[in-house]
Image 1 (cartoon, rainbow, N blue to C red):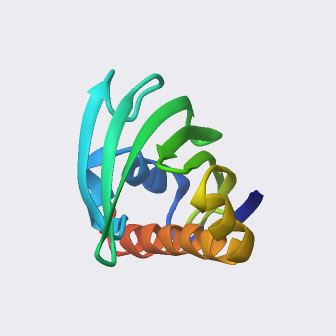
Image 2 (tube, helix red, strand yellow):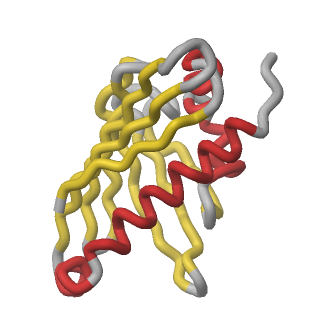
Length: 147
């Protein structure tokens, strides 16, 4: 399954990138993030692997993030590997004038086991979740005072 989601953030590109490129900020906008544990490399840099644990309802979801490309603002890509789900994510940021940034993510999911059935019957749920994360980042970013 592949799709793209987009959102406009009412901040200059440089400020958006500064907020996005700080792993400490993830707890401030990633709903349900319980822990972020670096496993290899420097967090947020190409080649870095980290274990992320999310709480979704009463269910704990563990995934391994691997950063594959870091060329901000043009691209920040990674893979997210969880039980039954392999997700490739490409993030891009484009300036829209002085005080607005267009944030685009391209998502590609591969499923195994039970998750294949869930994805088949509820494909919109994945896109909705991706958009929720983007909107949460937008809300967080727009709430920050420019330094």
